[in-house]
Image (cartoon, rainbow, N blue to C red):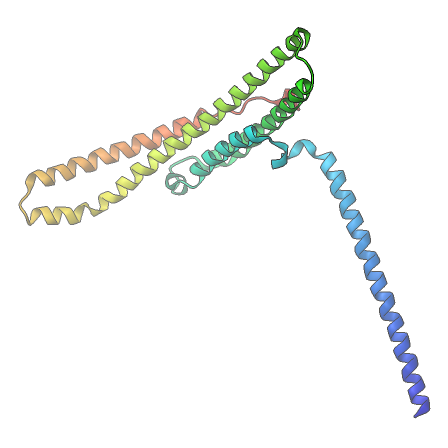
Length: 231
């Protein structure tokens, strides 16, 4: 029994030592991969800095504009006419990411320039020389903001056309209920009401076709500006 007890103590001691080694090894491996991940993440962040834009990269003015752009594209993507294939969904899938990417890059660049201009005038007297330097820079920035805003306005106009097409499609679907109303009018001997329903159907079909055509035309006017000179 004494011998067995001694053997058991040795086995327990060796097991505890082995467990401790495994725990220390696990901690070391985890620490290594954590360091490797942080190193790789930092390296990738530096390497691909021009391939992404973070919310923290944009100031309030830029945030407001970007929100308008994403709202417009979301409206189109989730529209009924888009989901039912009335619009060129392939073109939208290619166009919208490119539009949002180029817009976000410009907004980030504008944010940087606004911060630089604010820093240039902070805590100093605005002399004629400083004003002469800043004035054309501010005009260039304002022009860029106006151009980006116009791009977003065009996106919003497209979204508005799509909403109108959605409304026309909804009206067209509602025409399916006309049979119920024809039955009702037929049993009340209202010939004028029957004629009105027929005319309404023709009008709605025409409106639907025109609305979808206008939405497609509005989407085709969206052209991504060439921003290679900012890269």
